[in-house]
Length: 417
Image 1 (tube, rainbow, N blue to C red):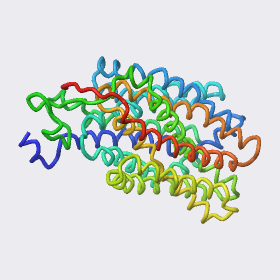
Image 2: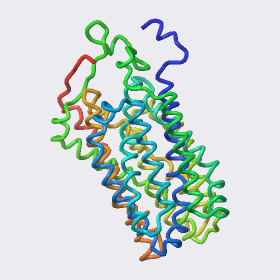
Image 3: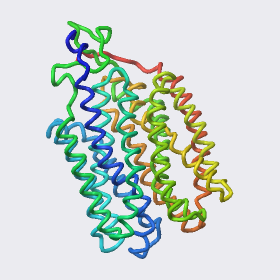
Image 4: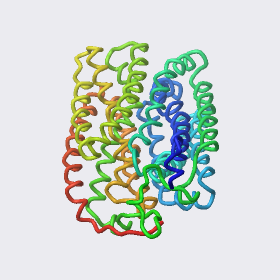
Protein backbone atom coordinates (compact mmCIF):
# COMPACT_ATOMS: atom_id res chain seq x y z
CA UNK A 1 0.00 0.00 0.00
CA UNK A 2 2.89 2.36 0.73
CA UNK A 3 4.29 1.94 -2.76
CA UNK A 4 0.84 2.44 -4.26
CA UNK A 5 0.49 5.77 -2.46
CA UNK A 6 3.78 6.98 -3.94
CA UNK A 7 2.65 6.33 -7.50
CA UNK A 8 2.10 9.58 -9.37
CA UNK A 9 -0.03 7.77 -11.93
CA UNK A 10 -2.51 5.58 -10.11
CA UNK A 11 -3.95 2.68 -12.18
CA UNK A 12 -7.39 4.22 -11.54
CA UNK A 13 -6.46 7.08 -13.88
CA UNK A 14 -6.27 4.61 -16.78
CA UNK A 15 -9.98 3.90 -16.33
CA UNK A 16 -10.70 7.61 -16.79
CA UNK A 17 -8.81 7.49 -20.09
CA UNK A 18 -10.84 4.45 -21.11
CA UNK A 19 -14.12 6.20 -20.43
CA UNK A 20 -12.90 9.34 -22.22
CA UNK A 21 -12.60 7.18 -25.33
CA UNK A 22 -16.07 5.72 -24.82
CA UNK A 23 -17.59 9.17 -24.32
CA UNK A 24 -15.84 10.68 -27.36
CA UNK A 25 -16.73 7.71 -29.54
CA UNK A 26 -20.40 7.52 -28.57
CA UNK A 27 -21.42 10.92 -27.20
CA UNK A 28 -19.22 13.32 -29.20
CA UNK A 29 -19.54 11.65 -32.56
CA UNK A 30 -23.16 10.50 -32.28
CA UNK A 31 -25.31 11.72 -29.38
CA UNK A 32 -24.19 15.37 -29.45
CA UNK A 33 -24.45 15.57 -33.22
CA UNK A 34 -27.90 13.90 -33.38
CA UNK A 35 -29.81 17.19 -33.55
CA UNK A 36 -27.89 18.16 -36.71
CA UNK A 37 -29.39 15.17 -38.53
CA UNK A 38 -32.93 15.43 -37.19
CA UNK A 39 -34.64 17.67 -39.75
CA UNK A 40 -32.82 16.33 -42.82
CA UNK A 41 -33.60 12.72 -41.87
CA UNK A 42 -37.30 13.53 -41.38
CA UNK A 43 -37.40 15.27 -44.78
CA UNK A 44 -35.58 12.45 -46.58
CA UNK A 45 -37.76 9.74 -45.04
CA UNK A 46 -40.86 11.87 -45.71
CA UNK A 47 -42.13 11.78 -42.14
CA UNK A 48 -42.59 13.99 -39.08
CA UNK A 49 -39.74 14.76 -36.70
CA UNK A 50 -41.69 13.14 -33.87
CA UNK A 51 -41.98 9.91 -35.86
CA UNK A 52 -38.22 9.63 -36.36
CA UNK A 53 -37.81 9.98 -32.61
CA UNK A 54 -39.92 6.88 -32.07
CA UNK A 55 -36.57 5.12 -32.46
CA UNK A 56 -36.04 5.79 -28.76
CA UNK A 57 -38.91 3.46 -27.85
CA UNK A 58 -37.19 0.24 -29.06
CA UNK A 59 -33.87 1.73 -27.96
CA UNK A 60 -35.02 2.41 -24.41
CA UNK A 61 -36.90 -0.88 -24.18
CA UNK A 62 -33.71 -2.70 -25.22
CA UNK A 63 -31.75 -0.81 -22.56
CA UNK A 64 -34.32 -1.55 -19.86
CA UNK A 65 -34.38 -5.23 -20.87
CA UNK A 66 -30.59 -5.65 -20.84
CA UNK A 67 -29.64 -3.61 -17.75
CA UNK A 68 -30.52 -6.35 -15.19
CA UNK A 69 -28.29 -8.81 -17.13
CA UNK A 70 -25.28 -6.54 -17.64
CA UNK A 71 -23.41 -7.77 -14.58
CA UNK A 72 -23.69 -11.39 -15.76
CA UNK A 73 -22.57 -10.45 -19.28
CA UNK A 74 -19.47 -8.71 -17.94
CA UNK A 75 -18.66 -11.65 -15.70
CA UNK A 76 -19.03 -14.03 -18.66
CA UNK A 77 -17.17 -12.04 -21.34
CA UNK A 78 -14.65 -10.12 -19.26
CA UNK A 79 -14.68 -6.41 -18.55
CA UNK A 80 -12.89 -5.10 -21.65
CA UNK A 81 -14.85 -7.37 -23.95
CA UNK A 82 -18.19 -6.38 -22.39
CA UNK A 83 -17.43 -2.67 -22.60
CA UNK A 84 -16.15 -3.02 -26.19
CA UNK A 85 -19.29 -4.92 -27.17
CA UNK A 86 -21.37 -2.03 -25.81
CA UNK A 87 -19.41 0.49 -27.89
CA UNK A 88 -19.74 -1.62 -31.05
CA UNK A 89 -23.50 -2.14 -30.66
CA UNK A 90 -24.14 1.56 -30.01
CA UNK A 91 -22.14 2.75 -33.03
CA UNK A 92 -23.45 -0.07 -35.23
CA UNK A 93 -27.04 1.03 -34.60
CA UNK A 94 -26.30 4.51 -35.93
CA UNK A 95 -24.39 3.09 -38.89
CA UNK A 96 -27.35 0.86 -39.81
CA UNK A 97 -29.65 3.89 -39.65
CA UNK A 98 -27.71 5.42 -42.52
CA UNK A 99 -28.91 2.54 -44.75
CA UNK A 100 -32.56 2.66 -43.61
CA UNK A 101 -34.90 2.74 -46.66
CA UNK A 102 -37.87 3.95 -44.63
CA UNK A 103 -38.78 5.24 -41.18
CA UNK A 104 -39.84 1.80 -39.87
CA UNK A 105 -36.38 0.33 -40.42
CA UNK A 106 -34.87 3.54 -39.06
CA UNK A 107 -36.85 3.14 -35.83
CA UNK A 108 -35.90 -0.55 -35.46
CA UNK A 109 -32.21 0.40 -35.69
CA UNK A 110 -32.65 1.91 -32.23
CA UNK A 111 -32.45 -1.61 -30.73
CA UNK A 112 -28.64 -2.08 -30.99
CA UNK A 113 -28.19 1.51 -29.78
CA UNK A 114 -30.20 0.66 -26.67
CA UNK A 115 -28.21 -2.51 -26.03
CA UNK A 116 -24.95 -0.58 -26.37
CA UNK A 117 -26.26 2.14 -24.07
CA UNK A 118 -26.94 -0.42 -21.34
CA UNK A 119 -23.57 -2.16 -21.62
CA UNK A 120 -21.27 0.85 -22.12
CA UNK A 121 -22.90 4.02 -20.80
CA UNK A 122 -25.25 2.94 -18.02
CA UNK A 123 -23.37 -0.02 -16.57
CA UNK A 124 -19.77 -0.59 -17.62
CA UNK A 125 -18.45 2.96 -17.47
CA UNK A 126 -20.15 4.06 -14.22
CA UNK A 127 -19.37 0.74 -12.49
CA UNK A 128 -15.71 0.94 -13.50
CA UNK A 129 -15.23 4.48 -12.21
CA UNK A 130 -17.20 3.92 -8.99
CA UNK A 131 -15.10 0.81 -8.30
CA UNK A 132 -11.75 2.50 -8.90
CA UNK A 133 -12.36 5.75 -7.01
CA UNK A 134 -13.03 6.04 -3.28
CA UNK A 135 -11.98 9.70 -3.48
CA UNK A 136 -12.68 12.21 -6.24
CA UNK A 137 -15.37 10.08 -7.88
CA UNK A 138 -17.30 13.16 -9.05
CA UNK A 139 -14.26 14.51 -10.88
CA UNK A 140 -13.42 11.10 -12.34
CA UNK A 141 -16.94 10.85 -13.77
CA UNK A 142 -17.03 14.47 -14.94
CA UNK A 143 -13.74 14.49 -16.85
CA UNK A 144 -14.76 12.02 -19.61
CA UNK A 145 -18.11 13.78 -20.11
CA UNK A 146 -16.39 17.17 -20.15
CA UNK A 147 -13.79 16.05 -22.69
CA UNK A 148 -16.47 14.56 -24.94
CA UNK A 149 -18.64 17.68 -24.79
CA UNK A 150 -15.66 19.95 -25.47
CA UNK A 151 -14.68 17.79 -28.43
CA UNK A 152 -18.28 17.99 -29.63
CA UNK A 153 -18.13 21.79 -29.62
CA UNK A 154 -15.21 21.51 -32.06
CA UNK A 155 -16.48 18.78 -34.37
CA UNK A 156 -20.13 19.91 -34.59
CA UNK A 157 -19.43 22.43 -37.41
CA UNK A 158 -17.39 19.77 -39.24
CA UNK A 159 -20.21 17.22 -39.03
CA UNK A 160 -22.67 19.87 -40.26
CA UNK A 161 -20.44 20.42 -43.31
CA UNK A 162 -20.28 16.65 -43.88
CA UNK A 163 -24.09 16.52 -43.90
CA UNK A 164 -24.29 19.38 -46.42
CA UNK A 165 -21.51 18.10 -48.70
CA UNK A 166 -21.98 14.33 -48.46
CA UNK A 167 -25.60 13.89 -47.45
CA UNK A 168 -26.84 12.64 -44.10
CA UNK A 169 -26.41 8.93 -44.88
CA UNK A 170 -22.71 9.06 -45.71
CA UNK A 171 -22.07 11.53 -42.88
CA UNK A 172 -23.85 9.38 -40.28
CA UNK A 173 -22.14 6.16 -41.38
CA UNK A 174 -18.74 7.87 -41.32
CA UNK A 175 -19.06 9.37 -37.84
CA UNK A 176 -20.43 6.02 -36.57
CA UNK A 177 -17.36 4.12 -37.75
CA UNK A 178 -15.00 6.78 -36.38
CA UNK A 179 -16.80 6.67 -33.03
CA UNK A 180 -16.63 2.87 -32.89
CA UNK A 181 -12.88 2.80 -33.55
CA UNK A 182 -12.13 5.48 -30.96
CA UNK A 183 -14.25 3.83 -28.26
CA UNK A 184 -12.96 0.28 -28.74
CA UNK A 185 -9.34 1.39 -28.99
CA UNK A 186 -9.44 3.29 -25.69
CA UNK A 187 -11.28 0.46 -23.94
CA UNK A 188 -8.79 -2.18 -25.01
CA UNK A 189 -5.84 0.01 -24.03
CA UNK A 190 -7.01 1.36 -20.67
CA UNK A 191 -10.20 -0.21 -19.23
CA UNK A 192 -10.00 -2.46 -16.20
CA UNK A 193 -12.40 -4.35 -13.93
CA UNK A 194 -12.65 -3.73 -10.17
CA UNK A 195 -9.27 -3.18 -8.45
CA UNK A 196 -9.80 -6.26 -6.27
CA UNK A 197 -9.49 -8.42 -9.39
CA UNK A 198 -5.93 -7.12 -9.79
CA UNK A 199 -4.98 -7.14 -6.13
CA UNK A 200 -5.08 -3.34 -5.96
CA UNK A 201 -6.97 -0.72 -3.96
CA UNK A 202 -9.11 2.13 -5.35
CA UNK A 203 -7.75 5.64 -5.62
CA UNK A 204 -8.26 7.41 -2.28
CA UNK A 205 -8.43 4.14 -0.33
CA UNK A 206 -7.17 4.37 3.24
CA UNK A 207 -6.83 1.89 6.07
CA UNK A 208 -9.94 3.48 7.60
CA UNK A 209 -11.91 1.92 4.73
CA UNK A 210 -10.48 -1.50 5.47
CA UNK A 211 -11.56 -4.38 7.62
CA UNK A 212 -9.94 -7.68 8.43
CA UNK A 213 -6.25 -7.57 7.54
CA UNK A 214 -6.66 -4.23 5.79
CA UNK A 215 -9.01 -5.70 3.17
CA UNK A 216 -11.51 -3.40 1.53
CA UNK A 217 -14.97 -3.46 3.07
CA UNK A 218 -18.13 -2.96 0.99
CA UNK A 219 -20.84 -1.13 2.89
CA UNK A 220 -24.40 -0.53 1.79
CA UNK A 221 -28.01 -1.62 1.50
CA UNK A 222 -29.07 -4.97 0.05
CA UNK A 223 -30.85 -4.89 -3.32
CA UNK A 224 -33.98 -6.55 -1.92
CA UNK A 225 -34.28 -3.81 0.72
CA UNK A 226 -33.66 -1.08 -1.85
CA UNK A 227 -36.44 -2.30 -4.13
CA UNK A 228 -38.97 -2.04 -1.30
CA UNK A 229 -37.84 1.42 -0.21
CA UNK A 230 -39.64 4.66 -1.08
CA UNK A 231 -36.19 6.25 -1.40
CA UNK A 232 -35.49 4.09 -4.44
CA UNK A 233 -38.66 5.16 -6.22
CA UNK A 234 -38.07 8.82 -5.45
CA UNK A 235 -34.52 8.53 -6.83
CA UNK A 236 -35.98 6.72 -9.84
CA UNK A 237 -38.30 9.69 -10.43
CA UNK A 238 -35.46 12.19 -10.01
CA UNK A 239 -33.36 10.35 -12.59
CA UNK A 240 -36.35 10.42 -14.95
CA UNK A 241 -36.64 14.18 -14.61
CA UNK A 242 -32.90 14.81 -14.81
CA UNK A 243 -32.77 12.82 -18.05
CA UNK A 244 -34.44 15.67 -19.92
CA UNK A 245 -31.23 17.61 -20.66
CA UNK A 246 -29.98 14.55 -22.53
CA UNK A 247 -33.26 14.43 -24.45
CA UNK A 248 -33.52 18.13 -25.20
CA UNK A 249 -29.90 18.07 -26.38
CA UNK A 250 -31.14 16.38 -29.56
CA UNK A 251 -33.54 19.27 -30.20
CA UNK A 252 -31.27 22.29 -29.80
CA UNK A 253 -30.70 22.65 -33.55
CA UNK A 254 -34.40 22.44 -34.55
CA UNK A 255 -35.31 24.44 -31.43
CA UNK A 256 -33.15 27.32 -32.66
CA UNK A 257 -34.50 27.03 -36.20
CA UNK A 258 -38.08 27.15 -34.91
CA UNK A 259 -37.20 30.39 -33.10
CA UNK A 260 -36.36 32.03 -36.42
CA UNK A 261 -32.57 31.75 -36.15
CA UNK A 262 -30.38 30.79 -39.12
CA UNK A 263 -28.76 27.39 -39.70
CA UNK A 264 -25.39 28.89 -38.75
CA UNK A 265 -26.81 30.31 -35.52
CA UNK A 266 -28.50 27.00 -34.72
CA UNK A 267 -25.24 25.11 -35.29
CA UNK A 268 -23.43 27.56 -33.01
CA UNK A 269 -26.09 26.97 -30.33
CA UNK A 270 -25.31 23.22 -30.45
CA UNK A 271 -21.59 23.96 -30.11
CA UNK A 272 -22.26 26.37 -27.24
CA UNK A 273 -24.29 23.73 -25.41
CA UNK A 274 -21.39 21.31 -25.78
CA UNK A 275 -18.86 23.90 -24.61
CA UNK A 276 -21.04 24.96 -21.67
CA UNK A 277 -21.42 21.31 -20.69
CA UNK A 278 -17.62 20.98 -20.70
CA UNK A 279 -17.16 23.90 -18.34
CA UNK A 280 -19.98 23.01 -15.99
CA UNK A 281 -18.97 19.35 -15.83
CA UNK A 282 -15.47 20.28 -14.68
CA UNK A 283 -16.39 23.20 -12.44
CA UNK A 284 -19.47 21.39 -11.18
CA UNK A 285 -17.49 18.30 -10.20
CA UNK A 286 -15.17 20.43 -8.06
CA UNK A 287 -18.08 22.33 -6.55
CA UNK A 288 -19.92 19.04 -6.09
CA UNK A 289 -16.99 17.64 -4.12
CA UNK A 290 -17.08 20.71 -1.88
CA UNK A 291 -20.86 21.00 -1.47
CA UNK A 292 -21.75 17.32 -1.53
CA UNK A 293 -24.10 15.69 -4.01
CA UNK A 294 -27.27 16.86 -2.28
CA UNK A 295 -26.54 20.59 -2.17
CA UNK A 296 -24.96 20.57 -5.61
CA UNK A 297 -28.01 18.85 -7.11
CA UNK A 298 -30.40 21.29 -5.47
CA UNK A 299 -28.32 24.20 -6.77
CA UNK A 300 -28.24 22.96 -10.36
CA UNK A 301 -32.00 22.28 -10.28
CA UNK A 302 -32.66 25.94 -9.47
CA UNK A 303 -30.35 27.08 -12.28
CA UNK A 304 -32.07 24.73 -14.74
CA UNK A 305 -35.53 26.02 -13.87
CA UNK A 306 -34.40 29.52 -14.84
CA UNK A 307 -32.55 28.31 -17.95
CA UNK A 308 -35.50 26.40 -19.41
CA UNK A 309 -37.84 29.33 -18.82
CA UNK A 310 -35.35 31.69 -20.47
CA UNK A 311 -35.02 29.36 -23.47
CA UNK A 312 -38.83 29.31 -23.72
CA UNK A 313 -39.42 33.05 -23.30
CA UNK A 314 -36.44 34.69 -25.04
CA UNK A 315 -38.66 36.83 -27.25
CA UNK A 316 -36.63 36.01 -30.35
CA UNK A 317 -33.50 37.53 -28.80
CA UNK A 318 -30.59 35.29 -29.83
CA UNK A 319 -28.36 36.39 -26.97
CA UNK A 320 -30.99 35.51 -24.37
CA UNK A 321 -31.63 32.25 -26.19
CA UNK A 322 -27.92 31.36 -26.00
CA UNK A 323 -27.82 32.20 -22.27
CA UNK A 324 -30.74 29.82 -21.77
CA UNK A 325 -29.04 27.09 -23.82
CA UNK A 326 -25.83 27.51 -21.82
CA UNK A 327 -27.82 27.31 -18.59
CA UNK A 328 -29.51 24.11 -19.75
CA UNK A 329 -26.04 22.55 -19.91
CA UNK A 330 -25.71 22.98 -16.15
CA UNK A 331 -27.25 19.66 -15.30
CA UNK A 332 -26.34 17.14 -12.65
CA UNK A 333 -27.44 14.03 -14.49
CA UNK A 334 -23.85 12.83 -14.67
CA UNK A 335 -23.47 13.11 -10.91
CA UNK A 336 -26.92 12.09 -9.71
CA UNK A 337 -27.30 9.25 -12.21
CA UNK A 338 -23.80 7.86 -11.78
CA UNK A 339 -23.10 8.72 -8.13
CA UNK A 340 -26.56 8.83 -6.55
CA UNK A 341 -26.95 5.07 -6.22
CA UNK A 342 -23.50 4.70 -4.64
CA UNK A 343 -23.93 7.56 -2.17
CA UNK A 344 -27.49 6.70 -1.15
CA UNK A 345 -27.33 2.89 -1.21
CA UNK A 346 -23.60 2.25 -0.78
CA UNK A 347 -21.24 -0.16 -2.52
CA UNK A 348 -22.43 -3.49 -1.10
CA UNK A 349 -24.58 -4.49 -4.10
CA UNK A 350 -23.95 -1.49 -6.37
CA UNK A 351 -23.55 -3.67 -9.48
CA UNK A 352 -27.12 -4.91 -8.99
CA UNK A 353 -28.69 -1.61 -7.88
CA UNK A 354 -27.11 0.71 -10.49
CA UNK A 355 -28.99 -0.87 -13.44
CA UNK A 356 -32.31 -0.58 -11.59
CA UNK A 357 -31.82 3.14 -10.92
CA UNK A 358 -30.76 3.84 -14.51
CA UNK A 359 -33.97 2.38 -15.89
CA UNK A 360 -35.51 5.72 -14.88
CA UNK A 361 -33.41 7.52 -17.48
CA UNK A 362 -34.64 5.18 -20.19
CA UNK A 363 -38.28 5.60 -19.27
CA UNK A 364 -37.89 9.32 -19.99
CA UNK A 365 -35.77 8.64 -23.05
CA UNK A 366 -38.48 6.38 -24.44
CA UNK A 367 -41.38 8.75 -23.84
CA UNK A 368 -39.91 12.23 -24.08
CA UNK A 369 -37.97 12.04 -27.34
CA UNK A 370 -41.03 11.35 -29.46
CA UNK A 371 -43.32 13.49 -27.32
CA UNK A 372 -41.15 16.58 -27.80
CA UNK A 373 -41.10 16.04 -31.57
CA UNK A 374 -44.86 15.60 -31.76
CA UNK A 375 -45.47 18.69 -29.62
CA UNK A 376 -43.58 20.67 -32.24
CA UNK A 377 -45.33 18.93 -35.14
CA UNK A 378 -48.74 19.85 -33.70
CA UNK A 379 -47.99 23.30 -32.25
CA UNK A 380 -45.06 24.59 -34.28
CA UNK A 381 -43.30 25.50 -31.03
CA UNK A 382 -41.17 23.92 -28.29
CA UNK A 383 -42.26 26.46 -25.68
CA UNK A 384 -44.82 24.26 -23.91
CA UNK A 385 -42.35 21.40 -23.45
CA UNK A 386 -39.64 23.72 -22.08
CA UNK A 387 -42.03 25.17 -19.51
CA UNK A 388 -43.18 21.66 -18.55
CA UNK A 389 -39.57 20.57 -17.97
CA UNK A 390 -38.98 23.60 -15.73
CA UNK A 391 -42.02 22.58 -13.68
CA UNK A 392 -40.73 19.01 -13.37
CA UNK A 393 -37.38 20.29 -12.13
CA UNK A 394 -39.25 22.10 -9.37
CA UNK A 395 -40.77 18.73 -8.38
CA UNK A 396 -37.34 17.09 -8.42
CA UNK A 397 -36.06 19.75 -5.99
CA UNK A 398 -38.59 18.54 -3.42
CA UNK A 399 -37.83 14.87 -4.11
CA UNK A 400 -34.06 15.28 -3.67
CA UNK A 401 -34.60 17.03 -0.36
CA UNK A 402 -36.82 14.18 0.88
CA UNK A 403 -34.42 11.47 -0.37
CA UNK A 404 -31.59 12.80 1.75
CA UNK A 405 -33.88 13.07 4.74
CA UNK A 406 -34.97 9.44 4.49
CA UNK A 407 -31.79 7.69 3.29
CA UNK A 408 -30.32 7.45 6.79
CA UNK A 409 -33.25 5.25 7.82
CA UNK A 410 -32.09 2.47 5.46
CA UNK A 411 -30.34 -0.57 7.04
CA UNK A 412 -26.67 -0.82 5.97
CA UNK A 413 -24.59 -3.99 6.06
CA UNK A 414 -20.88 -4.74 5.57
CA UNK A 415 -18.96 -7.36 3.60
CA UNK A 416 -15.21 -7.85 3.14
CA UNK A 417 -14.39 -7.61 -0.57
